[in-house]
Image 1: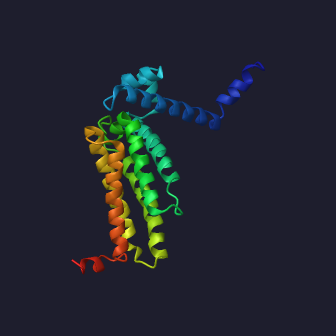
Image 2: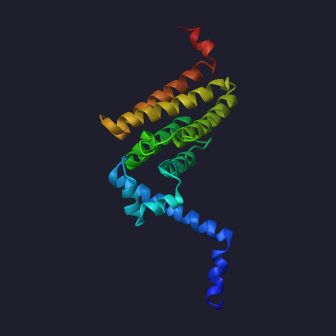
Image 3: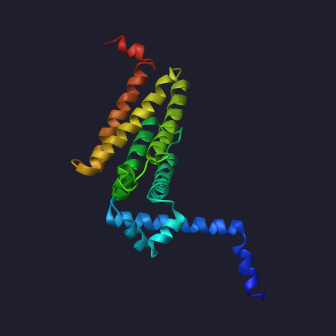
Length: 223
């Protein structure tokens, strides 16, 4: 064995380095898939992704078990980006109205900037088998949990019943997501207009909780 070939063979024999190279290659292929989705839309074909990556389909299948595995990898990468942007603005010291406005604006900006990628994740038409988990639902649950924690602490600090914080957070996130899906397809108003309507609705619900002292019994008693 020559001195020149020994280091190469040693590197190939290193499980750690081999795993790192595979992960880097997989990540590069995910980025290529995202570019292909932006170009071809949510019904992108594996051939389109392979062409964008500059590889053959068999090479793709060396790194992903099937189309479902690639869908999960792309969706998890995209939802991680969205979650990072959203969570970075969820600070407990921010006043509640500003916090809500920032969260809604960040979400709407993301789906407006990445409409084809968002459709790819939501429609799930690319994959041809049931998935073990749903990145969209997981992401929504994490954001809802962060909002619930912030507003639960805020209600508790005001001496109010914090029990409604979690319900409000999950309902609010679901409302924004559903309205965003509709808006992306119809665009009957501007992003700022949709943001302001959603803010009005989300804030109105939270204000009702505050006015009722956190208890639905007190609100229902006035009806």
